[in-house]
Length: 174
Image (cartoon, rainbow, N blue to C red; front, side):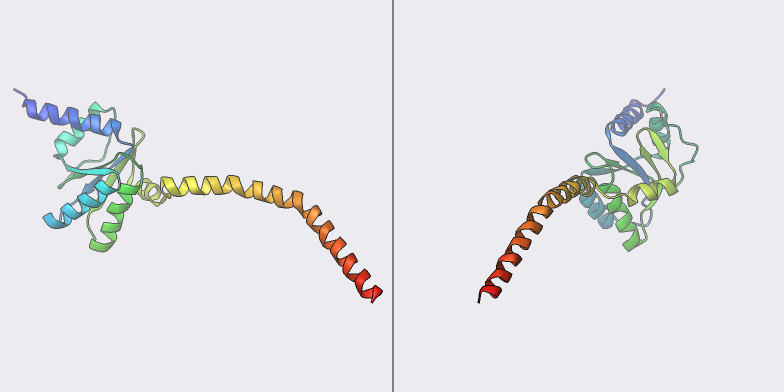
């Protein structure tokens, strides 16, 4: 007989996976309980959640969510769900890995697709949502400011020329 708690865990995992903007599976082995707790807190502040889930339940949950992975899961695995910003919680994991040498990414999930380790690294290197929005607005504003400057340039040049003519007339009149 199948354990009802395991069925619920698989259903819960697949639903969280479907609702998350992105996710990553990490190997957290080597982190102390205190380090993992601090990491969870930082990820939560960034709009994500870290959950430790058994590998067999992860495999079944991925299949149930329609995500097929040919990468076997070994060792302790935690899942980082990015619920608000697609990238920011994953950046926190990478920053921790740079400082502590742990945790290590196994693979990622974005838009229902598996991201290999190489693709996941490129994904995490992308700027955050706020940075991209700021660049977009700046890009929109830059051509407009150039247009305004271009339209005003002739008027400014005319005013400076008239001022110079007035200055020369005053010098000649003295």
